[in-house]
Length: 181
Image (cartoon, rainbow, N blue to C red; front, side, top):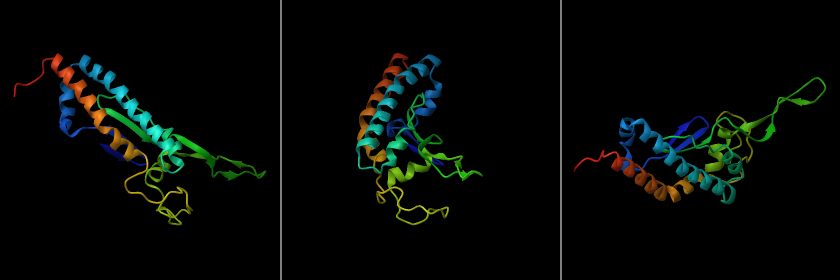
């Protein structure tokens, strides 16, 4: 499941068969929750590695590599990869001139500001929604299917979800929480 925050995307592998899993996970004993976190983390890291490779070697806009530097895998009971956010990436830009003519206070763009353009390409419009002059910032044209995040998640979702289901089933079996249906 991808959730959107301003300038950030969070990808959680949340298989359809496990939609109601969150409520069940809250009922697990503390030790089982910790074990699930320990076993889900490598799956999250594996997906994050695939996303980094896709950013570097796919047909994505060049900013994808910058945005990929912001990828993190917070420790969670679900498989989770965060991309974007406030981490500064790329070359510093902007700033203001001081009395001696030197430029000060230049800042690199936050990864979240480049996230959507790196995934879906540019619109080709001369200005953005805020009215700023943009030029052809993302080089690649609009691609509603995505260049690197969506294709990578789609290609890797089944094996990651299957591995996660096996982990959960093993924990449930060991704790004898299986219901007789």
